[in-house]
Length: 273
Image (cartoon, rainbow, N blue to C red; front, side, top):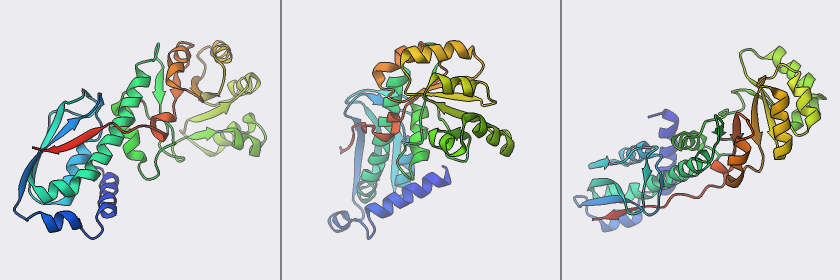
């Protein structure tokens, strides 16, 4: 288990019970044992199962946790995906944090899968940095479980020249020149909004051009002019209904902020037997 993820879970448990669980600690005897089932309340793609085990491990106590499904698997409403048996105190204290993580990650994986299923050709769905603060590592893992592809993880990973950078530097050409001069072995991506900007970016040494908020007609013209010289990413207002038609235009990637910034959690419950 990644140390960053362990820390996230530790902080989540501290947030949830800073002085213990006042209800469970006063109602449930130490020796009390229970069995509970993880049950799907809707269809979707699972993500976050390994985190559930880490939540229980950090809570402590005696328990046995078994899942009959794995991350990335499609599961259906009413399906029992796992069981936990052992100390009732452990189960009750781990329940909410475990479900919060499992439900949110599975929601992201399910949404990603919906977008991926609409793709035409060799186009890939990318995530963005529009993630919940301090949970990016989990949310980007969920995107992969849903069949998507991670874009840059953080600002340190690659050069992404956006409109504000261009305004500050003066031009796309100068921005790319500076990036090439001051970085090595790092991909450079440029965001463009017009055909003129696209043509300028195409003449630089950038690796990827992001077509931001372009119409289908303009995107198609950029694909034609590009002639496979650069990788092309379509971005902006990429709702589920547009994915099929935009991917069919010939872009290499479509980035979708909605995968993580406004996703609905997948409904999963933990019920005692």
